[in-house]
Length: 298
Image (cartoon, rainbow, N blue to C red; front, side):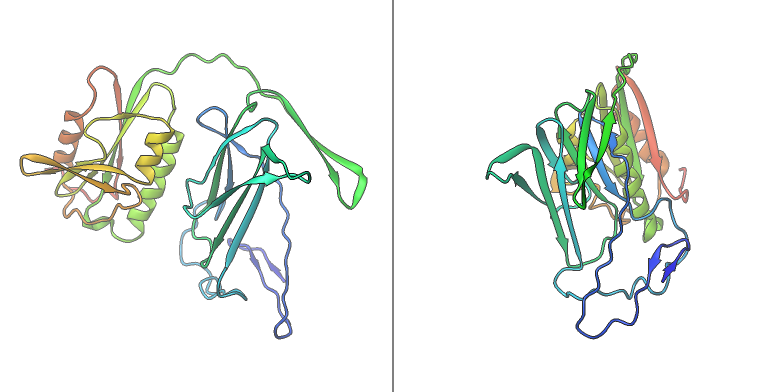
């Protein structure tokens, strides 16, 4: 039984005891050309758009036949050029392994990714694949295993548009971590912040993250250049500098993931003064304020 509603649901009934039912869903989608250049992104989204209101009653009580693994994902990656790196910004426990050919050789153009979890998917599953040749035209051909005479082909042309160089800029993110942000608000802000950080230009770009409430702290003392290493540090694990009395303390934390609504009242004026005091004076500055709107201006 298929039910087409705001949430896609498949219900299978009349299953004899101790029997296994396998459901195959097949869909085709484009891979996003991610920034930086030479990176493709595979994203299995939880939803096409944001859903508001309570979820269907049947979803939280869903169970699987195995108590050990409720979710298993295997991705076989094949590129036209050598693969440099494969990462997952959304999940930490992803396993990466080389692809072994039929002649027991390790392929430089293929990689296998596996992920197993005792819980169901709670956020979009994302893989970033960095490889050579993504800026060149390429073609793939694949035979249908059920009909060897049938061949599917994909031809990709990459336009070479000459764009004007990006101006050097600094992006500062001011995140409300006051008590009013408790619950889903702080979770939505963290997802929005992670998305904005991944969409920033990688060339001539500097960024920093500030958290505010009754106090203000920052990810770094001054903005850092936007590159893969600093992006991973900001989203996963980094050194946070905290102002205490008349000196600075540094703590090794997962800054974005470790954000909580525990900074007391929302004092915006002090936070803005702190942000502009620590901006770069020789380049343009863009400030993003992420808040629920319940702020105190003085």
